[in-house]
Image (cartoon, rainbow, N blue to C red; front, side, top):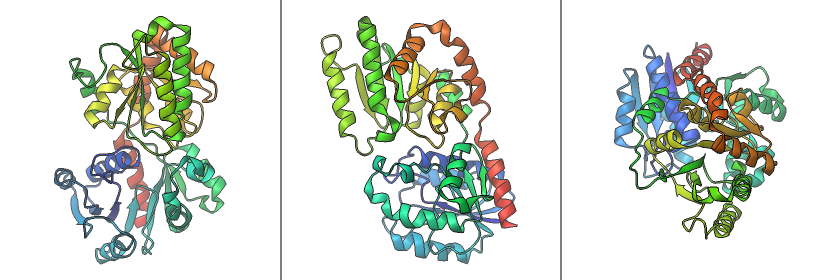
Length: 388
């Protein structure tokens, strides 16, 4: 079978590995290439994808043809007009888009992955420049797709609610976690790092800094924790790792205010923003964190939960969206509006280590249930059914 893959999101716009959809796109594509060596793949790639990563795609053992976009950057014409024509010349049986959008000019069979639909329910959480995609490209893609993959049952249910016409075409395929990288992180933790605060315990948030992640509540819960245990101000930090997104002013102001409140006990700040981290740095942080705090208002999946669990780090998560579906019984869940409950959960994880021993063990077992190999096998089955 001949499979075309829209690789627009195989890396972030700046050429880095990226996170979220970029991480999913790269992971599922690599797993599909390893799983589908009897098929032929045609993968479009953005100009920003590095030569090293292009070589990784070619070295999977599958029959791979890379179609690099012309010009210094992607444009409307190159993505929605030229790319469908370039795919058409290869006569693919099916097109797979790992990020929920099909080029407007594509008229063949297709399978797309939908990660979440929060932008339709809460547009105020997102930057306005995405309006063309949300108003035009995504609805048309969902209407024309032969089959749709949702990364969680929560996302599947929202699809059916917002777009009833998708009923019967949506299948749930959970994301995976790379246990090889997780185990390597445990064996290669760098205690001498000068960038990371490994001199003391720390609560970790990992993700893009944006309103949906509910960092305001997370900061206030950490502040409440310190107020109940003032001696911990010099013993525990809150580390925020991830790129700066949008609508961050209020979040930054809260960080500054809380750090100012504790400046006598901790002049360097009880909350510290690291900025973007590499894949290796991410695993290093996860392996050393006392707990991961992930209190999002909504998530279509929530991969950081699984990644933390894979290295035995306790997880405090919101009880909204797909997070309970992903974490199962291996996380501590809190209402994202309940600052007191979130603060109490921090006390449990930071000051009662024997109480989280079972959560650590449950988390490791839970993460082992999710793999990219399984995700690729289930995705390939859908592609084969559509393309046959």
